[in-house]
Structure formats: structure tokens, C-alpha cells
Length: 268
Image 1 (tube, rainbow, N blue to C red):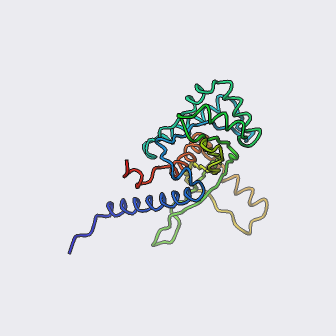
Image 2: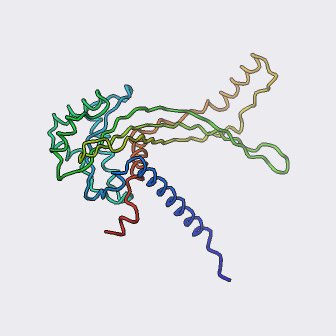
Image 3: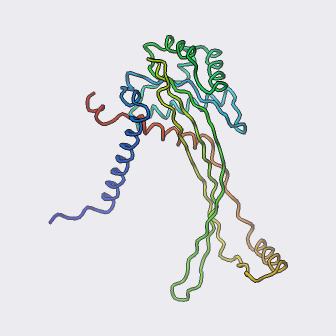
């Protein structure tokens, strides 16, 4: 009989299997939702990054922010993880169109909620031989959530609690709607919502904190709270994760759809 595989190898094999299954599902979804993108060879039928704008008032929508978000999506789609897709970057698009015309194009996209026939016809002419697809994005939601959980360690012999821990978590969830246009037929090729999330957690030792008695009155509860505050200050939530972290996760989720399939890699 053969020897059993070490635990670490079995775990790595399981992770690899899960990643493969996850990637296959995303590829199948892309084939249903955007067959032109799924069939394209994105090393030849390149994707141009038109830009990312914001519909969230709290984030603003400055030229500097647009550039930062747009560079981020191009950098992520061009990573090794997604087959080093030769993206036409936001900077390259700006050079081709000119800074002012690019800014006007993004303003029109934001105001109109998409690209009209005239804009697509112009982009078809400008990017012929340079890119087949062009992608626009708009940040539709950016919300912060707070949560907490408690855990304790109980002595098996005495059944008494020996330690208590409260974990405070701050999460950020950012949604980006992306629209890919096929400049060959000047039609919308894929309308996709991608969501990124990142969290920060902080643990607080609550071992010495006095538990409130369900039967205590208002004054009793107030006294208990004052004593607890003296023992240990109220635990604080960690700072909100940076927007770039959640956007990076959102764009990585997008990249999983566009990653070249093994069949196409094998034909190259």
C-alpha cells in the first residue's frame, strides 16, 4: 500500500482544486453573459481602459481620483495572475485621445450612464488596430460596516471562564459597475457588477469586565458600566480600510473572469 500524503500536501491540493472549480464557473458565466469577450484572444483583441468615475458623493470624483482608480484596474488586469493581459492603460488612452477629450468622454459617460453610438463610432476609428474592447467603470456604492464578536476560554475542570476576548471589526464594501464595449460592432459586450471587500479587526481582552445582571435596575447597570470603564476603557473599532484595498479586490474578482482558459493557453 502507498503511504498517505502529508497533511500540507493534501491541503494544497484541495485549495488548487477549489481554485480551478471557481475559475471554471466564472469562465462559464462569462461565456453566457459576454460571448464575444469569452471567445476573444485578449492578447490580440486588447482591452483599453477608458477610466473609472464615481457616483458616490462621499468619495468625490476629481481628476486625480479618476486617474488613481483607472490606473489601479489596468495594473491588476495586467498581473501575472491573469496571464499578463496586454492592457491599453489609462495613460495610453489619455495619450491617444488627449487629456481634455478623455476628460470630456468620462464626463459624458457619467452623465449619460453609458456610451452613445456617436462616441463608440469615434472610439472605433481612434483605436482601430490598437484595441478591440474598451471598458468604463463607475463606483456605485461604498459603505462601511461595523461588527463585533466575543469568545471565551473555559477551564474544563472548574467550568469557570478564564479569559474573554472581544473582537471589533470594521469592513468596507465597494461596488463597481463595469461596461465593456466591443469596438468591432460598436455594441455593449458585457455589463458586469464587481464587488470588493476588505476588513480590519482588533482584539480586546475583556477578562476582568463585570457582567451585567439581567435583574439589575437602572442605577445598578449604571454603576456596573462605570466600574467596567474604570477597569478597561470601551474597546474601539479599528480604522476603516483604505478604498484602494477594496477596489483592488473588486478588480481581482473581475480578472478571474478574463483570465485566459487553459485551452487557449495550450494553443499558443
